[in-house]
Image 1: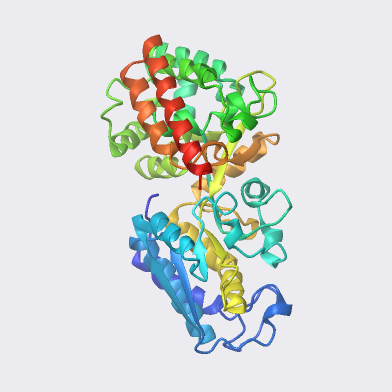
Image 2: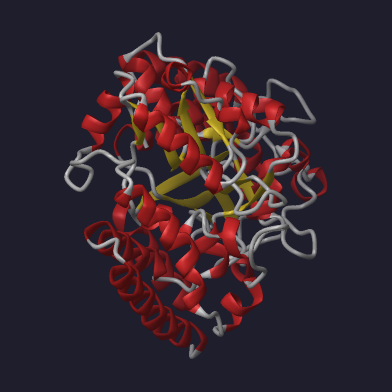
Length: 441
């Protein structure tokens, strides 16, 4: 995710965090101990002076600097000693080790897995005041089947189809008329004939995994086989559908000729120069970067396609910056006070600016955030859009993401029928192994 923090922003945060560190969502006072959790029954009368709390995060670089600034302001306002453990690239393995030893941080980022991996280690936070501020798109990701919510999610990751409206207009294509993957293929043919590259992304893990639910799982789609994916009996020959459509991207010349070696920077520069029409499965941060290169760029963000005319158009949503409280923490009141502080519009909004992510809290939306504007426009134009967790996180065993990445490279290298079959065999074999491994523990 693009880092956009400047010294001016950090200095601004110092003042805004110090101010909001003295404000509670239900009580306002000048006392340095005023920041309390929303659950006032648990936190009323708490004194945090000298109390220690560990927060584990994935942040590095400028994002870590911004978060540290927030924690410093919180400590200054409350007399607490909240410390940050920043694991960076080792976050997942470090958390798994601590899960095994049953000694987790008091507060930690769940990085996409609050329900699927961590819920047995987390406190139920459904009664916290900030829950009422969640955008409806977030609830499908973090609300358990019993209605419980275990985390504060200040931002969300969203995926869809990015559109260059100027390219579409010049080619005579109405992107808002695209509903199915077949519609996208037809539009791509028209755009190619007009001299543009239809699709600017390649074929990787995201293309094979994140959009798969629009063929196999959601209402009105070609198949309803989610249960078989979860119980290990999925017939991978059905993957012929999605692989066949993706192979057409290659075989029909809808991708850049050098897509296999194209760097992310070059891709952004070409997009900003109006070279391509669509970017399938990406989030608005790519458009934010393109807009910085071309302020006159005319872009849109639309849902992923359906596999049938009756199928739902889908936007995958994942946890962005999401914080849970370890169920066995000895610092419950302080942990809830910290989450209440992070949920304030000033703090959540500034962290989201630093990470470039979309707010999951309706009261912390930054209207000058281009990504927020694009998402708001999508919700207005597509009121019936279906929101759910990223498909691979919900239906695939841990470890499949890298397998999908390898499979995408295989398909890009050989998009013939034989190549498609090799990809199916590769996916089936690794899925079986990872499913067995996950269920033998």
